[in-house]
Image (tube, rainbow, N blue to C red; front, side, top):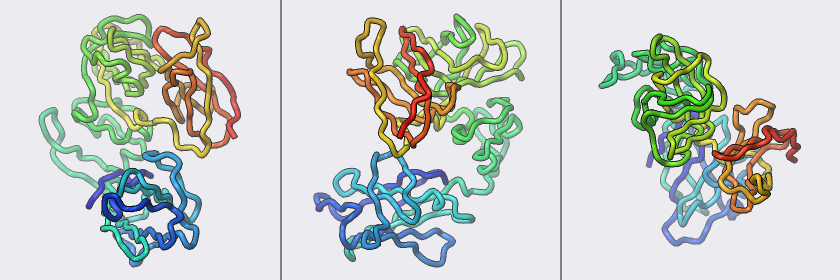
Length: 340
């Protein structure tokens, strides 16, 4: 069994035992988790007997284990989730990891984890809209150095992308959401699309890449705060680097930040209540936390409940909280607020 993931910390899953079997916990006597990198000469074993296995607070959201430990918890039936230390995903020269569970002498199958971030070079012909493979170093992308030279046809901004955008590839149907033009412009942070999804917030947290309609080398990119599907209206987190206008090209792309979720910190912090102008709880408002008075980068975010509250998983520290929802105003930011 194989699982293909980037060489950044990420939950992994494997099947242990048969369906309907009794649940195994991180403290089950005789439990051990074994890990071996493809270039290692020996296994690394973590055992419940030595208190080297701890539980998972939030399934699906990787959290760094305590030093010298791993995390383990049942996801559903006989499918279990494991959080390995971050260093495991960055072993020099390792192309794969092999992981298995030993439950009192009963072993799961080995799970083979492909570490694609350790690929040194992908070669091929110059990419076009209809074919070709990017000739680009994967590590260079991960280290924030995507440039115009790496992608044909000026598809991406010539400036550097943040590390959360390193999986972005040109014109992939799984990455490029829509390529269209600006239809109407209310301000440099609010405009409508000529074509786009009718779903509310379909493009929230995606990245808008702008190309000037007159000077095609003039480009900029900005995070998207809100999307109104009925009006096809986008609200940006900040103004683009050049003055955009109706007719300018805009491509919306998915980034790792779009999957940010409620955070990975050790403290479950409940913020609220968030109220509307009449003092009623405001449901489905986007609330996010930053560690400065800037609206980005977002450390964690989630939507408010029907009672106006939201829970974010944050590490101890001081945070600023921000809110956004179409048709409502917020006194941004709220803070600093100490989370402990």
